[in-house]
Length: 378
Image (cartoon, rainbow, N blue to C red; front, side):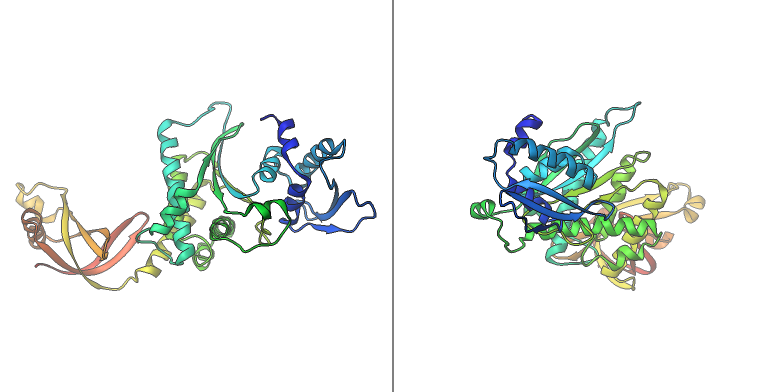
């Protein structure tokens, strides 16, 4: 569809909804054939716009096209984004954009295949948190996975590598035809959580304060979502990645979230995301000594047991599969001295369950058991 065709598909009411959702106000005007709206631009200066009330006027398409051009300038948004938002009123759009440079006009297939599942997991976790806000999600729920399943993978766009995820809302056809208020659906609340979380992450990085993210987890990002943002950054370490949100016009956009963009880059942003994740993880699983049972699934030593003298002092690590709750397990890594390491070898070879007392702590993506007090076989 060409730009001209797209403009012809926009109704004046769709343009009005686009503006009123962003806190513009419809004002009275003596000419009943036009809409007169007042609002604020990207610099918070007051501006006004005039729109035809109906598409039947001879110059309505031309006037709508001029309005779209002016809106793109006023809101500092690409013209294509303005048009897309007016046409796709029944959905919010989440964008991930990687700018293309003169030396590279693409990303590797491996990186692309990494980004898509991580963003799928990101929206799944957002839905889980919207249902049951927790600082750390140990297991995604069916409702969260269904939310991600219902999202749509949309086209990329010129000038960059990236993709869009559309959060489609169930809107009754009658409401599409009228400018009628209606209840906020669950899908919209998830988008608002994501937008608020990205905005909070931006503030935390600008102020070099991970506690801003920690304090906002109930309405924003949890530990898992912070991890994913960090992992995406690791996948493209020298490239600024821009996240943004475009809103459906059927509901008013919360104050402060009208234009959400978040571009983490450099070690500072990675450090803040990691620190917030670690703190949030400790909130969900308190760093206190616990009695833990599970199966040994991995043994590792930096020296072979054949060299007895060296083996006595070698670092020996264990991986134990701990069932935190029914159906939810995490792998704990910890070290053991020589005598108890031999017990762990026995448990691993025979399949015996083991009991260990220590403090589970999450660092980045991995769980570790610290302050190990005892290790026995069951």
